[in-house]
Length: 329
Image (cartoon, rainbow, N blue to C red; front, side, top):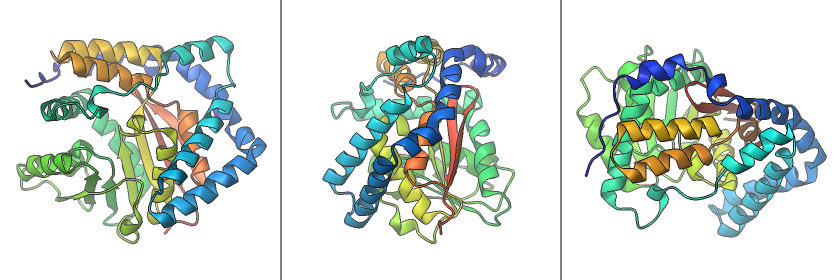
């Protein structure tokens, strides 16, 4: 069983609908929470310092499960404090939307064909909706004028975004790589890119844990993580950002799904129209419910040690942050 390609008429419709019309309550809530990030960190400086100590320990011991568990618990506590800010109605709606339930593709019982079908469908959908093009603008801005900028996309699945960048980027001096913990995803990405036109930029593929990036020190200028953090708990997201800040002078660009009721409804409609597979429709909705608000992503980046981090909503339905550390490199 395979997923049907998204309909070509979806892209024009998606581009004409303003993000503010899709997620007005989420954007309103985010503004209030964003204004509170600095105060939350200052008021809980001891917790933030404890997270930093645990991140140092996790980096040194290769990600001991106890350290990871403590980081996750403390980060969830900080996120809970941040969520107290904002209008009561918007917070109630967000509490209803937000979900910790896992996507079907994240379950161990999910068959290989479903993983493959969902990856192909998601890749096609991102190309049809112009998502990759929107992400590329922020990524290229993050590397600025660095010649032969080295970019690695981690937790990349089959590397759809990097493969798109290899074919469509106006910059032809990029050095591109992508990695994932799944050997099957890495192999799939290699196989697809092997059929790319000769003029496409080369892409290196590797199997790598996104929370253990020490091997990339001196090998990358910028880390990216696209459409993956909603599969992780808050603690793992903080660890990922921390690891990227340690090895990449230009930091990390994280892009993921914006959590909102409107995005969840839109995801259900688009998925229903573009694929006959009910598991993919469920996962599309869960992605929106497990997504992040920009303020939450800013909080995670700050807890990870970012000196500069400012998240924003990106059309058609995403959130992005570029986090950097002055001590990077």
